[in-house]
Length: 278
Image (cartoon, rainbow, N blue to C red):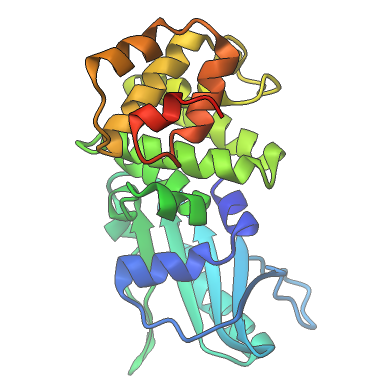
């Protein structure tokens, strides 16, 4: 699933490098997923998990080799430098190694510099769950739903749970208008990967999702869950909710109306505007 995020949004790689490590990413006009196979005239296949190349005016300016590492593998000390040199030779540009570590701890085991020789070192940029950027702004999540999805994985059990999941739901719902199938994948993945408490809130927030979502919870959504999600998002956006408005939202038993509210709640300027007839 992690690789799908990069495939759907290649700009996720430079975003993570700049936001997590303050890497000075060169200006680029395009980020493109390239073949991860690095064979030349050799019978031994070299294949990274993914390769993303940033281009400016069609010219490669930075290549990013991406590896998803779920456990320590001593062999990577020898294969990762091969990946970098092969990609560098193919695209004739600077190359960097980004390692995704989908765990809260232990990233230091794979982040040690790989010494090739005197004054020659490969340094993996390793991002564990705790190092992933925190996304609580719905606008940022809408612009980069893949980054928001990673943020939800990393921070949904922290003090910013409601803000993180509310922002992520905004991003995934907006993405669904562009690619409904992949949005369903993100939604179902998070519902299964998050903790029980976080997953419950996520399911409520995503109650607006299409009836075609395959997860059992999504098919069993109700208007009450949507109403609670609307109030949670209003609170996150710091919009004042009077007792009268709160009661009207909670008392609504019309699933179509609560679905409309949940679609509009990210765009209105007040709770009262949300309830106005269009």
